[in-house]
Image (cartoon, rainbow, N blue to C red; front, side, top):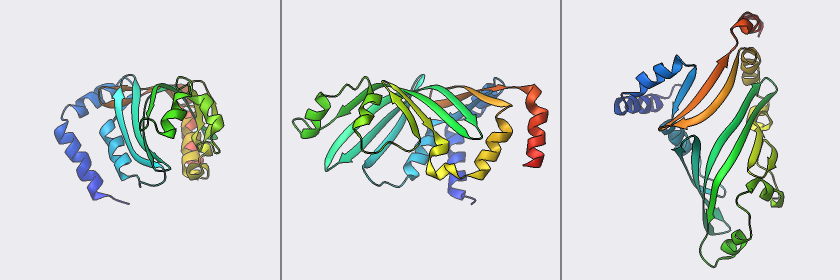
Length: 209
């Protein structure tokens, strides 16, 4: 559905960041896509606040993406911050795999609270090992060990049955691959690799999709 407010927000961003289009065009010649973190912040602000998550912020800590969250666990306010690094991204018709590294994880809770005492016994340098204590894994998580997390977004219920996404990935998987994902300035930059020789086959798939 056409969202006039979103268009206005986008135009407002361009007016306040006149150099963005020049930077985006320059990076596009290098097969890089620039996504303003303000766009992610706008999307986060639109997310319904429900469950244990009381607040979420994103920021750049190059080359990682910084995340800060406020959680409400059984009436106890906890603050979580971490740097998320992208090791690899594999986008195929049956798999949308993202490998992450979590660094500088910090969790704060009210002093002398049961949550603070519990956190004192945790090894926050190896957050993946802590997931074994959770009764339910996050959606799409297929592996977690030490500071490494592997997600397959095609296992997330909201995406698993999305035929349009699967068809798009099937067409693009042999032509385009994601080489890197990193932050730069206040941008999330996605570096692409292109196999020009696979383009005719992709066009055939597109016509028959």
